[in-house]
Length: 432
Image 1 (cartoon, rainbow, N blue to C red):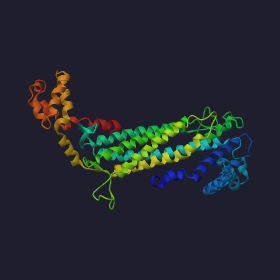
Image 2: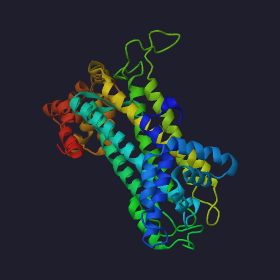
Image 3: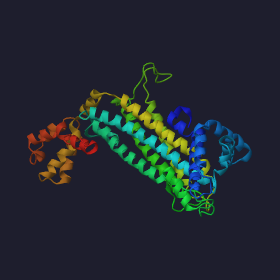
Image 4: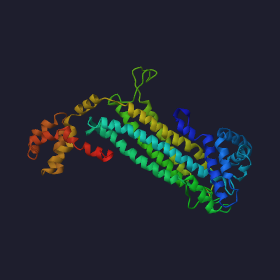
């Protein structure tokens, strides 16, 4: 991911040094497992770990890249660099393994670490939304469907919907972490020809990974497709929030605005403008997440026991997708915490919509008291389409007052009546 849309944590996680750390972790765990079979002398793994703890991983990965210019094979280059920098015990690294044993198992470790960082970012955005939702729990605003005035709601309820969606996102991330948390050390075609299952079991147990039940040379890529599609779905939540902010900041609406810092500029040509650039950036990043999800789906169908058509894809989408979502979640949290809410504008739009926004309740009251739904709908629609003053027209319409008296009608034209169950929804989501 380009620096503009990167975060320090994800950049560090996907660095060459971090990859070397993950590969070494798998390799040394396998050496320790071989020691239990007395194939490798006791204490070898411990000595390798001591050297690995002090070696400059940046220098190790840089040396591996130099060697790779000749070998044209990254794992062989890595092992050669390890022999140079870790000493003679490094000859036991990769014993019985094939490249994908270390690469795929290490990839699972890195993806799980990325998932943890993403869970933390989801939690941060959720916390910001809960704070603002409680702040505006009773701030009435116009609900809109099809971009048109619908019924009154509250701005807090609007934000609460994103809280519930992020709860689902967190659950999906945890499930994706389980889905991706599988390793394999079963050799060139997955048949344990040169490495026994107990060595795999001990190695993966030490790494905290589950055993892939039936591996080929690689871990099946349906697991990775689930992971990256989960990121895309979470990106959909972020984009929905971004689109909401963009619409509320439109000149014709002006109900909520992104934070706009001192000295910030909105347009190079028009000094009056405050453009929702943060939210627009989020919309673009989430488009990328969906494209990465599609690429992960394409990786599922590999030739026979494996080919490497997935490799180039994953080298790009793994760092880019996790980093883009991490950045997007952080930026969304910043937007929510700094969101400027204009309650007067919200009230103004409710007033401008007039009392027609209560039409649904009137319809139900008529049906409840014996009117046919078809006739009641026509009566209320006729009154509503007459513009402001629907309440007075209904109170003077004998077809209406035959079923609903004037006092009952008056109570139905009430925000308190419309929003009386707000606490129930908040309690359902927040457990209040």
